[in-house]
Length: 405
Image 1 (cartoon, rainbow, N blue to C red):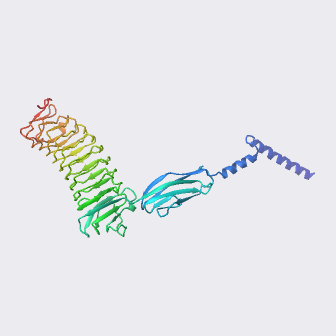
Image 2: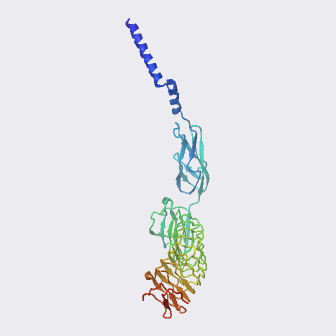
Image 3: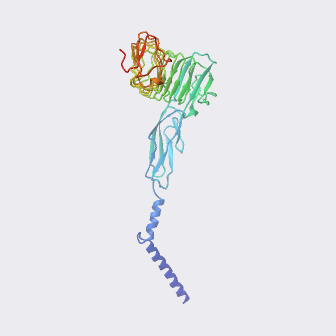
């Protein structure tokens, strides 16, 4: 009797479990469906893999990385193998970090162990950026340089003995400051993505910056350069090449230039029509006969003392605050559109007419003496120039609003 009762109780218990399970899974079917669904989630297969870059360019010595994405995101086995098609050109570790070893082309690939899915990136390794300088200074003398780099500073070094190898003591470790380096050869090469180079007063006869496209600021004042090619330096914003022996200077490719100083050279032509971001232009002491600044609407300072200009149109340079144009061949000058002009030195020109009426005369300093042909200078209506303004005694101011004859 007791045994039968136990059997009945057990039967009722099992029946209860069955009925409860059926109710819970009424919208899904029996429990077997749930088990199969778990198995599908647990065994979700890889359907593909992609890289964040399909192509990449690096310089010898540089390190970069690629990022891989395995699909689907919740795949069970995301293990993948990185490989380089030519380990002599570039290496890649199993985290996607690449080291460029020598110039060439190589394919960096990643392959999943699940499904054998593959993605590739074509890598081009180029020779390191470099700047070459030749000086007349003797071996053993010092050359003083200011060097800076915005990235990859560990790969910046200077070949002081010109042997093409990075020897002990040739790493550049002091950036954004002047450092003296002892010459072991008269031609030296600066390697790496240098963005700033000040190499003025170093008796340089040659300066080759064509192999460094990262360069943004270059100051080579006071050397002996006869040629300077900056056509490849499209990131250049500041160029100071004053006091050299340049006869030509092509800046038409340097559309990011904001400051250009080419004072004291032998330039006969200068095309700045493409340099629309220029805020400062100084081409004093050259042999220019014409200068078109009508495209340089951002210009704030313009200096072209001691040239041979006969005409100057600054009507488009409405942001101009300073103008120096003395010792040229200008016959007329009109600054009526230059309402922000505050300082003007334009003496020693064969002027016959000058219009200074720009509505800002009260805030201007004007020096316009040494112009014997100038008899009338138009100024703002009702304005009496102060005694600090300089002009020839033969010239008078007209402030009644009418034009000079």
